[in-house]
Amino acid sequence: MTDRYAVFGNPVAHSQSPWIHTRFAELTGQDLRYDRMEAPVGGFDQALRAFVADGGRGLNVTVPFKQDAWHAVDQRSQRATRAGAVNTIVVTEGDKLFGDNTDGVGLLRDLRDNHGLAVTGSRVLLLGAGGAVRGVLEPLTKAAPAGLVIANRTVERAQALLPLCGDIPTAACGFAELARMEPFDLVINGTSAGLSGSMPDLPPALFTEGAAAYDMVYGATRTVFMGWSRNAGAETVLDGLGMLVEQAAESFLLWRGVRPETSGVITALREKLTQG
Ligand code: ATR
Image (cartoon, rainbow, N blue to C red):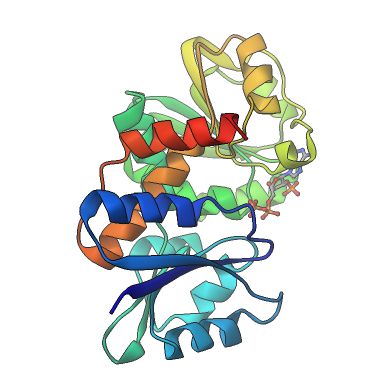
C-alpha cells in the first residue's frame, strides 16, 4: 500500500513541499503519496488525528501550526523541545507521534554544504526573535560561531532567547545598537518583514569584507533583504530555498530512512519558481 504523508498549514496552497517530496520519492524509489492539508485555525489536533486514523505515516507542519504540533506529539527530539516548535511528525508504532524540528539542520546544511559558508568561528547576526529564529537556534549555536548576536525590533523577545544559546558568547539587542558593534561575517534574516515587502531598520555598516547575508524566506525574485544586503556590501546573498529543500530532506530521512540527493531538486525548484 502507498504510504501517505502531507503538509499541514493555513494557508497551504503555496507550499512547495508536495513537489519536493514527490521528487525525493522518485529519486529514492520510495512508494509514497504527499498531499497538502489546510486545517482550520484552532482545528489542527482534529485534522491531525483524522489523518493518522486514515493511515497517514508522517507530516510536515508549517505556519501557523508548529506550536500546536509541539503540544500534540507524544514525544519530541531535543532540538524540537528547545525550539518550542515541531515541523515534522513521524507516526510510529501504535500510532504514537514523534515530533522533530528539521529547520535548523536544513539551514546549516544549506549554509555549509551547499554554499561552503563557515559558521564555526564566524561572527553571526540573527535578525528576528519569532518562531523562525527559535527553530534554528539550537543547531546554529551547536555549530560554535565565535559570537552570536540576536537583534529584534522588540528587544525583550531577543533577550528571552538568550538562555537557549548554550555557552557561546551571545548578546541580544535592538537594531539601532548594531551600529556600535563589530561587523558580522554572516547575517541571517529570520524576521517576517519581507513578507510585507518591508525591511528591518538596520544600520548600513553591518558586514565584514567577504560577508554573507542569508534570508530564511525565498521567492521567485531576490528578496528585499537580499537587495539591501548587496547594497550594504555583502559579498554573498542567498535566499532560503536551499534551506527549504534541506529541511525537507531531513524529514524524508526520518520517515523513510534514506537521505535523498538535494542538489538537483534545489536547481529544479529554482527553475520552477522563476518560470512561475
Ligand atoms: P515567525 O514564526 O515567522 O518567526 P513571528 O513569531 O510572528 O513569526 O515573528 C516575526 C518576527 O519578525 C519577529 O521577530 C518580528 O519582530 P517583533 O518581535 O518586534 O514583532 C519580526 N518583524 C515582523 N515585521 C517586522 C518589521 N517590519 N521590521 C522588523 N521586524 C519585523
